[in-house]
Length: 138
Image (cartoon, rainbow, N blue to C red):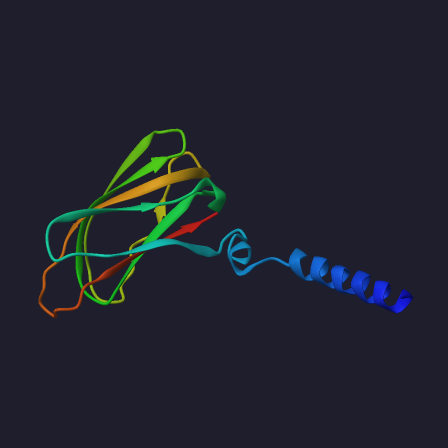
C-alpha cells in the first residue's frame, strides 16, 4: 500500500515538474526573438486580409512580414491596438517568393495588438498562391 501511494505521489510530482517547463510558444517570448503571430494564404487580386492577434500573445514593439510560395505586392497595413487606436503603415513593397519586409517599429513602444489588416494585390504568373506571415518581437 505504501509503495502504491509513493508511486502516485512520485507520478504527480513528475507531471507537475514537466508541466512547469516552458512551452515552445513561451520560449519565443524571450525579448528580441521573433514570434509568428499568424499567416494568411492570399488570393490573386486586389484584396485585404486580417490576422487577429490575441492579448494572450503579449505586447510587441516591432513587426515584420515574410512572403512564401508566391509573389505579393503589398500596399499598406493597418495595426489595430488593444485600446482601439490604429496605425496606418504604408509599405508599397513587391515581395518576391521568400522575401521579408523591413523591421517595422511600432509607435509607443510595447503595444498589445488586436489585429493587423493587410491591403495587397497578387498576380497569378506562377499559379502558386503566396502566403503572408506576420512576426512580432517583444
